[in-house]
Image (cartoon, rainbow, N blue to C red):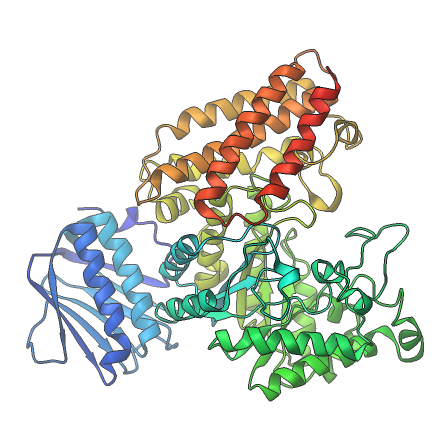
Length: 621
């Protein structure tokens, strides 16, 4: 039997006391569900039955009520649990003759069984006696997935991710949409993007609800509207036609004109189609990075009333429309934080999303204090930092997520939302395991808060997310994520490895000196990581695919290093012929992995970006 000290639970639990002896699961064991609303929690009990059969080969009987005087497993739901201050919490007791899970709500039961399932997965039929009292640090523990930077997951991938996140007690999911929802009134915007349809979104919403996850509608409504504004039908709504010189996102129209009533009407028309697909009372209206505000059509209004006031007027119109639909608005906090004088005038029911993906303290400390003092509820929103790195940035991401939990707990944040982004104009090229690893880490902080253990992250997350008991997968992902430390950081915190896969060779030289020895040492280390990957033993139906995805991450990094050698004209640089052959193989791998996880829309454009690298090799022959 495995010792309690050897368990790496994700998330970590608040209080655990080891008992004496063990409980043994046997065929025919009885699981009794006692609740005033058994129908609400019955699916949770049935999932436990399925898990025990799949994991242990044990068949159990699930019964309703307390007709069985002494069941083997008792699920007691609907009453306060002594020592547990939150209805999402639970008490789990494993005794030699019975397992008992007590919770005040179905959510709490789901969380308690999630912990029990991890213990069973590690222990087998014989599980150690123990007592656990556990509850969350943050009321909301969410994940935002970028499904707009060319890569839209297929339904199988989304269902698997929801199951995975729910097992780590994540209870909110945002699918960030710019142009990838299938609006019937606006087909030209999502043409060729393989959008999520209304029917699919309704199915996702139901699937989430059955697992105590709230699916929140998330649609850009001010900035990040370039996918709309490039079309003739919407171009007149842009704040500016173009900027010269280009701003952060380029010279193309990027933001709606906040002063144009038609901008609000467009948003309302989107909500007319989008919101009925969701049962959540919340809507993430985004409203971030309005880069062009004041540069064009809103200039006169801003000069007259001030940028903060003009922004607040637009925010208020969107919030009032949502309130008329009995919905409450979430919005990114970046623009509000630059105009703090308008924060007290925010409409009732607005929740601010304080985001920052690099630092451990800022903006969570400053903005957390700002919104707490104003009495405005807020989430802290760290990231996975995968989109601008290809393979992650382990130490920075761990510090970022830890810092968000620390300051969120200090200032009373109601939510902890981990964001996984692609890269504007460059798509989403990071293999999915990079994102899944750091979403798993974030789930740990969202539940356990700043007390979440960071001492054994690779082992814990590798085991829980990928089912790899050898420890190889987690270590590989953590180590590959720290390779960025050897290189200069590119614009907007993009890693050298990312820049090398998107920038011309001439531009790479402009990032700073990269020694030949560093590049070759990194290539050798990547070869070693690929050798260690062969030892990993993944569990699950997609075990082969996960290994392919991790191999792709390694191969992307190798090609980036080879481009570094070529850019600096080092003697050890591969020939153009070798680079072309390597790129062709890399594209084949990339297409295979993409096709297994994601919809076809966006693939051609992403492959075309890789193709531009090949043009450089042919041009240097």
